[in-house]
Length: 217
Image (cartoon, rainbow, N blue to C red; front, side):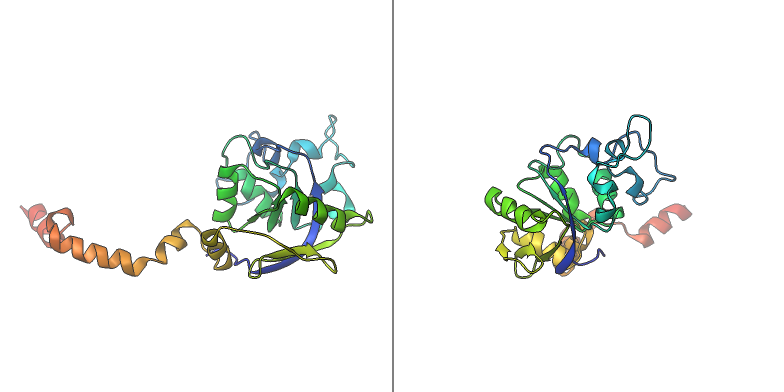
């Protein structure tokens, strides 16, 4: 069970480059302390965070004090392109991000976001630019409100913009379902099929009694 995404307000950080790939988001050379799906927050933009001498780059947006609490990333088009590594999504999730807003996403990255409870919010180019202007116009960071139930987004205290989203994706995120959880929503149909199929093709299903008897011989 994932954390449901219904309504969320968080500090937005701008990373407006286009074509940011998954190796930039979570470099392949990063090795977690143990084999796990968690603990990737230190991998997030690891190579971009550092200067050539290994010190923190003060110009990189997520290193700046004012964006330390950021939980929403506003990015450029084709975010998450490149290889299909899921660790890119894990790095964003483990660093506390709940949503990425961009004009477009690489399809596999977008799918991985949904399966891990992150909202990959696609906005038209015009609305995306309006949101950027409204959120960062003063130079100071601003919180952004996302209402997945009402399908609106906007800077706190500013205009509300509607967005379109696939109905299945919306339902999955609102209910906090991963791929297995989504499948189990149809468990009654799965059980009904198995019951009927077992009557039609009993030889397909293991029979514990028969197996035990065969073992005894």
